Length: 560
Image 1 (tube, rainbow, N blue to C red):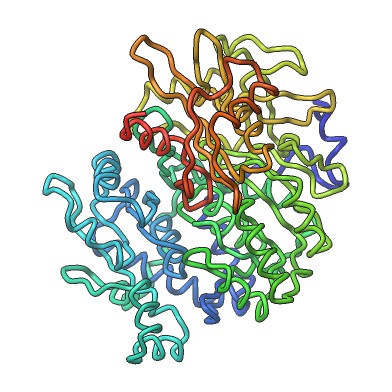
Image 2: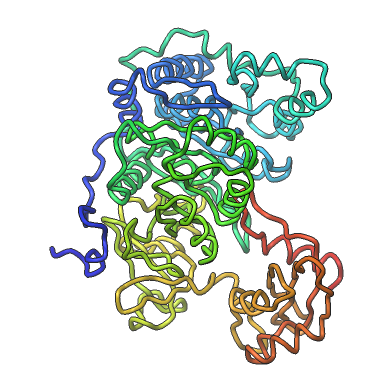
């Protein structure tokens, strides 16, 4: 079978097909422990853990979980920020053949309730600052054991001591990092066990490894099932894409959360696959990043555009060098050309945009780490990945190249379906293994892909489809507008009306009529917002994505 046409734009040496996994992620980490034992695996506020130490902790934690009754196929919930304990817990669960269920520790009690009702985990490993959210769950949740994690225990002893001093600023930092809890099992007690018996069965390559809940724009979050095979395959695809990375020499900055699909795959699979060194950040704080850069400069930097912007600004302000950052990937939202240009001026390398979704483990498409990349597009399919563009109303019908349609993808990284939700699985996974992404795209003559909009976020007004992204781009082009978010609000007569929320530039004066007049000059009348409101800021996800769904709900509550 000949290679797809788009592979001619790959960086030289990048294969059209990867070697597919034949073993589980447990084999991946055990290989790293065996071959890179003395090298640093993680770093947390300056404290390093070697691969040998990591492997020992994984096996001890696995035995502790086994003694709590965790068996193959059981779900174990992780409610943790990025920290060394997260890495250990992830692989300790997998070592037993059990399934990791990742959760954002900032989720509310009701959000966690829905997920725990769905996956029925009996054991949860939880950041102590989030423990109360689980202890306040109703009695019908089948949770039996909570293992509490104190982040301070993973820090250098000197820093841990300083945070206990009676200094107000230090006390404030301590309060953000830990909470005193009762009625839990401590993480440290788990590590007091002997390592799990080496003869204990390991999971198979096609076994379920993780469940990650997708945000869901029109319904309750759904648990996407990722297998050892799909995550391992995406790590190998990433290794092939970043062909110039060197085994045992790369430093990854784990800024994106590991409870998110991209952070999980990159920092828990791709990094140990190439025996890299992860510098872990429990949350993005630009000064923490700058302090780390001075001590352990990153070579692999994976983030979202707002993080690139803030990091670049502070690097310029402080005179901090970013020249070590050779491999830089932006995802989760469109990469502005100005962001790429400034970052590349500071690093001397390329900042490339990629594309994926939880159901793709997550990366499906990327720009080459090579001059053939094209800013403004999401790139071309990853190795061993096929795509096609179809009529969203009839996904069996492909549309001609250059025409807008829904993106479908197929490859070893595609998920296994939604947990306890066969109806949604059938709607999303088509015959032949094709994944419906729900994104509208256009593909140019060279097979470079540009995302136009989300199918589910299209606004239908007067029988016409309105792309929120198009209206947002129009508003952002106005000199007074810093950012814009466009949503559809329901009409009593049916359909929706287009409404925009905007953040003004400093010193700008809000003039709704003038903004609508400006839009009318650039877009057709039915796309012009019927109402525009000014806000101080937008609600954001931990990845820095604007939460259109929350904006819509806020506007409805306000009676707009």
